[in-house]
Length: 404
Image 1 (cartoon, rainbow, N blue to C red):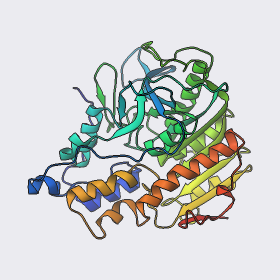
Image 2: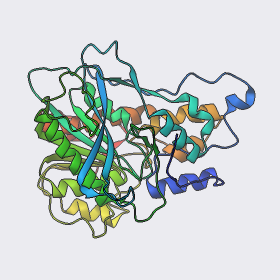
Image 3: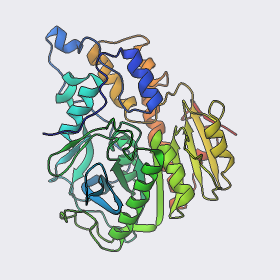
Image 4: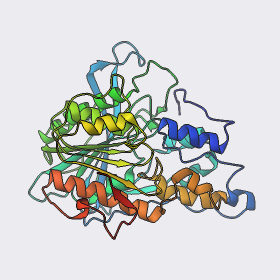
C-alpha cells in the first residue's frame, strides 16, 4: 500500500482537533484520547461500527468508477496526466442477495483516515453500508432522477452515506465523487490517496465545482449508454441507459456545499441544489443570480453569522429554503451523528464530550432529519412530488426551524 503525504494532526489535543475540523470542514469526528475503553479494559471490541438502514422501499446497489477528465491536465501527477476522480454510483437494485455489501470506505483509505485523526485502534471496526456492489439496477419503465454529491475538505465520498443510500432506496441514482488531493480513497491500482499539503493542488471550491460538472458529463454518457469508467470495467446490469439527464440535482457538505452553489450557478443541468452548511466562501465571491430551486441546511455557517452565506442567499430568485436544526453543529448533517456516539461509547467518553463534536441535537433525530429533508427537496423539484414537510415546522421534527 502506497500513499501520498497527508496533513498529520499528531500531538494535537482533542479540542484543537475539533477546532481544526470545524474550521476546515473536516469529516474527522474527533481525535482519540488515551485509547478505546474496551482496549484498556481488555473487553472484546464490537464487530463493526454501524450505519442506519435506509427507509425506502428498494434495496440499494452500488458500483465504483474511475473517471478521468481529459480537459484538465494534472501537473501534480506529471506530464501527460489528467484530473482523475474515483466515483461511486448508488441506485435502486433488484435481487441483491448474492452481491457483497460495500464498506463505508475502502479499507486502506479508512486506515489512513483514522491514523490521521488519531483513531488507529478503530480500524477493524470499518462500517458497512446498505449498498450491494454490482447488483442489477431496478428498472421501472422510467429513467432514474440523478443527484450528485460533493464532500467536504479533508473528507471522503462516503461521509454522507446516510443521505446517499436513503435517496437511492427511494428510487434515485446518486453519484458520489472523491475530490483528488483533498480526500481519502483507494485507486484501482492499490494506491491510497490522501489529502496533500501542496498549496498548488486543485482543492479550492471552484476545483470541486469543476469536478462536479465533469461528473454531470459522465452521467450524460451513462444515460446515452456509454461506459465512462476509464478502465472499462463491467457495469451492473441495467445501469447503462437508466439515468435521466433531464432530472439532475446536486448537494454537498461544507466545502462541497459551496462547490454545489458554484456549480448550480454555472450549470443549468443542475435543476435543484442543496447545501449542507456550506460556508459559501469563494475568491472571487459567488456571483450571478439563480432562478432554479436551492435549499440550505445551516448549522455553523448561517446567514446571521456569515456575510458570504447571506450574500449567496440574496442571489436566489427561484424557490429558496433555509432550515436550521437547534443544537446542530457543522457535522450534524452527516454520518458522524450515527457513528460518533458509538465511538464515544467505545472510548468511554460521557457528559459534554460527545456534544463538543456533534452538537447537542439528539443523534437519532439528526439522522431522521438527514433522511427526510433532502429527499423531500429533491422529490419536489426532480419528481414534482410536493409533500408538506417543506411547508414549515413539523411536529415530527421539533428541532427544525425555517428561516425567513
